[in-house]
Image 1 (cartoon, rainbow, N blue to C red):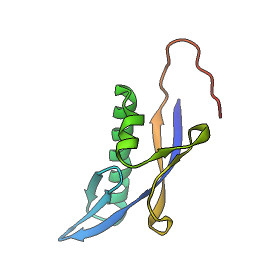
Image 2: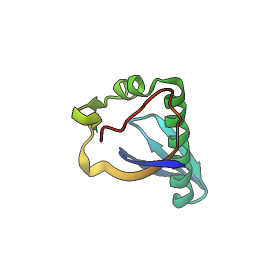
Image 3: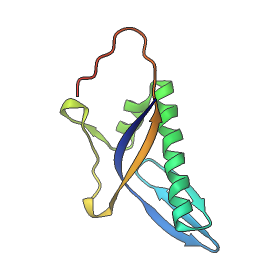
Image 4: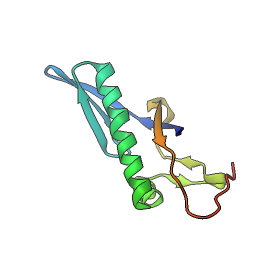
Length: 106
């Protein structure tokens, strides 16, 4: 089972010689590829691995706060980045089993 979340983060894509570099400055995560499409695909995977690691270590809230995100009511997360620089990226995350009863409050 897979949970898919959609996050809006600023993405910078630059060409460096024969490589395209895709970087998310807000989360300080980057990757590269031989084409712009491959660079974005690789960045999505890097972001997925970054978020999964944070969840597994129980540090996601702290990491997001350190990156400048603010938590609002109902666990909405807001960042202080101008909206014209945001791109919508879907990051698939694996299903995590929880201990005890856990209910969705969405």
